[in-house]
Image (tube, rainbow, N blue to C red; front, side, top):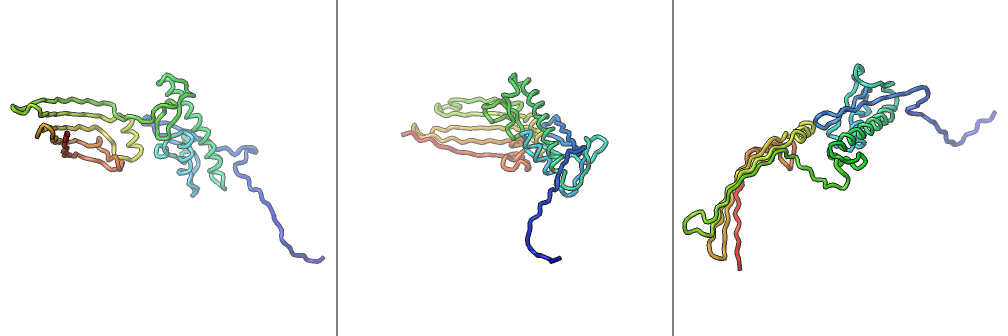
Length: 248
């Protein structure tokens, strides 16, 4: 028998996530009172990166930031069923289970929000940053739960200064519990309250020239959080300003 040499192509089919007779993995999603989500799996991470991948899959399906999602693995007493962590099945099987669970959780979330907002669930959407809003509504959200302002303005505060103006103002704000919970879950500096005291004086130098000075002292500026770096806290700040008006 002669030996012949040549080149050929062979195809191999290696199935992942077979449903023939059962290859199940389940996922549970819990929403915390602060608006974060916990994904419960009975799988374990053997280097596949399921904690990262699972959080990303859930965040995209729920419409929330990935920082609000935590994957809890390996508690077989309370976790859902899993066939096992082997071969290359985990991302495929657990990932699809997370997608299905996240879709159900999102529907429930929208139904609850619809009742509060008095709209139909299909008119709501998640904005990707942790809010549920009516489609087409403004995207801005105010994290402040309490806001109080008081001020007084005096015209001609001194004899002979009929065109001068003096002002004093006090402002207090308190950040809501949901925003504080978001800070805790995200690892940011937790916002609390802010108090600002401002004093100003407008001096009429000549009939066509005004100079105004302004002093502002803020206790716990930014409610304690640096807006340019949320993980960084802020303390008290003092601001001095001067402006001038010249009328021709």
